[in-house]
Each structure stands twice: as C-alpha cells, then as structure tokens.
Image (tube, rainbow, N blue to C red; front, side):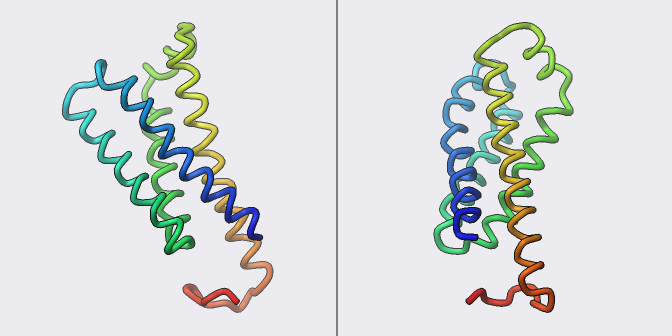
Length: 130
C-alpha cells in the first residue's frame, strides 16, 4: 500500500513540476485573465504537493479534484485536439504527458481508496490508519 501512496505523491509532484514548462509554453498565447486562472491552478498544485508530505490522504482528494479539473479544461477545448492533429510536437507532448499524469493521479487514488475499503469495510471516514 505504501508503494501506491508513493506513486500518487510522485504523480502529484510531477504534475506540479511539469506545470512550470507548461506555464512558460502557454504564457505568450493565452489572454492575461485565462493565464491568471491557469497560474492559480498551478499554485493549487504547489499547495497539494506540499500537502502530500503532511496530510497525504487529504492531498489525494485535492489531487483528484485538480486533475479532473485540468482534464476537463484540456479536453473541452477543440483547439487542444487540433494542436495534436496539427503536428506541433511540443504542444502535443505537453497535452499527452499532462493527460497521462492526470489520469494516473485519478486512477491511483481510486485504487488506493478502493483497496483501503476492502481491507476495513467498517472504517469511518477520517479513521486513522494503523
């Protein structure tokens, strides 16, 4: 179970670190208001990365919310798909790597939570793990 927790933590930290080149890449093409909201999302990922060290379980929930929001923002825009189809290698790689990371966060967290429920079906939410 510890290896799953480390994989979730690593995925969240990777998403945060990967956000730096992403922000550099999108800064020239986004309007200021949109860039500010993307930057705020990245700050939330930074907070989530720090949270993985002190409150890991809460961090996983926040990571799932942030990853789902990022996936929704990415795949709801037809322009993102046209970047992949258009052959812009850097933009396509950014979208693909980001999507894989976000899916990993969601999938690993779902597995972690399901495995925890199987181990102790009568556990109350917030119960401390031994």
